[in-house]
Image (cartoon, rainbow, N blue to C red; front, side, top):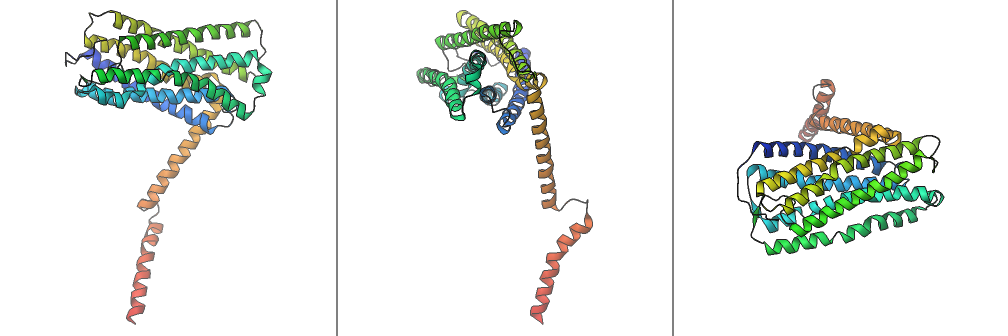
Length: 339
């Protein structure tokens, strides 16, 4: 993929896509941070492996959103270009996390399928077994995907002095784009296949879910999440294939198409917390508790700041007493010394 910047013009469409992208990334960063905090502080949601995998997914999406929200947006808006090597060290985690997100979604679907096929063994796992199970699920693809940063670094060294706006694809060549697009495509097709099987199992009562409907709501929320993910992620490899194979596109057109693909990805990454809140009663209750805790913490923090400042004008008598007490003590001590 040709990455030489040939035009510094700023189109209205590009400005709109940047504004929308910043909005989606900001909302997604807040919602995923809140979801991760809720799961982390809730023993109930961490009982099953699915909750921990959702926690890892939320944190990975926060990383991906940060990689797009800050430096690339600033450079694009100011039309400032930086050396490619600096861009790589500042943003190499962006494409890596973007490739890891659909794989984690696939791992969640695999975890749900295992819980269906081996329900008794799955529920009887000890804490140590859960840690080994989750570590094996997540660490294996994460290590394999470390191939991406190494290849990105090699490409960067070959184009050391190139000046770029630091888009996520600036330090990726055509072969890397095709590889990442293939990973995204296969992961999403795997999710579609597994959840189709799970949906058929539930529909034809091949599996029996808990009577309190909690497990059924969890499956419903996960299926909705994966449906949104498929809708928003599948166009990404198609757009990437088009950009790579169409060599006549200008650099600005390439960036615009890539931003459109990123917009769709960010929509999917923004909706995790709202979908879980709407579809799962467990997540809804825990999010309400966490929200109340945050409100209490903010109020307590504000009251402490006010007390440090002097308590405002809400209690002038108390304020005056607090101020006069040390002054009176100093005057009394001075008087005793003089006498």
